Length: 286
Picture 1 (cartoon, rainbow, N blue to C red):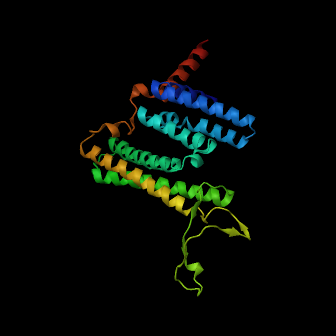
Picture 2 (tube, rainbow, N blue to C red; picture 1 turned 120 degrees about the vertical axis):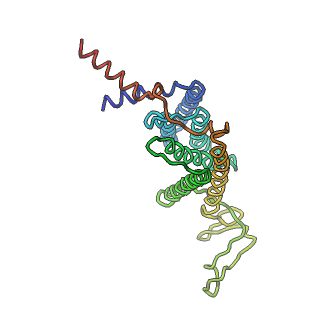
Picture 3 (cartoon, helix red, strand yellow; picture 1 turned 60 degrees about the vertical axis):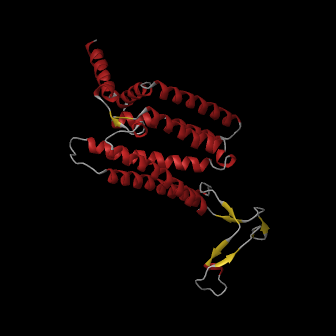
């Protein structure tokens, strides 16, 4: 266990410092997260302190993926992922940007659809570059796989939000105030005819008015909106990715977002293992 931890820690350290720009962003974000955690601790918001710890761990994910799977994330992609994590957890949750900025959640879900499509695209490209798998895929097929992968990630995330709201009574699927509802459950004859109520200005529960100015939709509109913007983000990248493959790798946007296999000189996990073996050998000779 000690050996594995030492080797991984050494490899992660080398990976983090490989690209100066991404390491700078990582360092700044980590510093900001620690400041937020200290503030939340003294304010007694211990749940947010835990969220800060989780964010610190998430910031290491790009480097961990690169070391563990021996792939090279483009600097631009790595920086976008780091900023996405910070924007979602620290700005969105702790600083309440989800409430203060109406389109904050929409922006992040759109970006998530775009990035998830890039990941799906990358998986196919990396597999296709493997010498053990000698086959050629059409640009349309790769674009469709990237799109479907992104939408699957989006759906799974909505499942997660629903589960958190259902079992832990959170509000990850943000509710929406509406002024018109239509339901067959309101049909006075008990049939299958939708009964509509328009111009709703208030809602009362157990005789108590909620003061919302309308009827409270329980998460459905938010879920559909999130999936729609995920669809848009996935479609945009898949469209760009299609022409990237069709033009045989020409396109600066995709090049900056698609990972590649690490060269032997940048395999920091292998380098860390060699250093460990060398150190142990030198200790034995002493």
